[in-house]
Image (cartoon, rainbow, N blue to C red; front, side):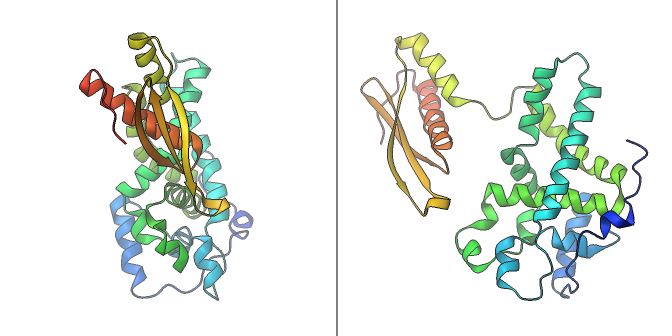
Length: 261
């Protein structure tokens, strides 16, 4: 890995950057760099990392959104994470390394990191996405985080982006090692409820709303004659996890579980 100290010019040439950065935006980008302890040679690359497609579609003169940088950053992130886990967790088999990696590079993990370093403050969103709460959406935050990694790789090379990624991800890796990461609440609830009541939870879709490409699902979980929820998610799986988490935590606290709609 130490050989990838710089990025060939022909690779950089594949990425167009947006030429003009306003005087109001430059301090925001500089503050972001200070928080991370990094310095871009080409600040336009960093700026482009925050341009969501909804913004570039609405504003004329925007050369590129952050999707190509996200594609590149995803690959760099995967390589850095896999290499670190391989070296630092030599006693762990491949299956465990895969599970740890899947969490630390997940949308949930990356969006959590993004919020902790102020990515949401730097995002450029279209009006519709802004009004729908885009600055808080996990997918947008995670994509922008990957785009930042891609931009920094192009700007400063592999070793620099490797250090940045590990500075941000090692705390997430530690969470997994200490079992403090996101849990599979459906499994936890089923194991808990089966052991105590000899029954299985039952999930039911209560309603769904929104357009086909951005639906919200509301699901309740039934434990015998008691119902918990409904809880929402962007997919049935996510909504089931939310309902399971609510029920599991309530049962753990109360010992008996009480119906609450």
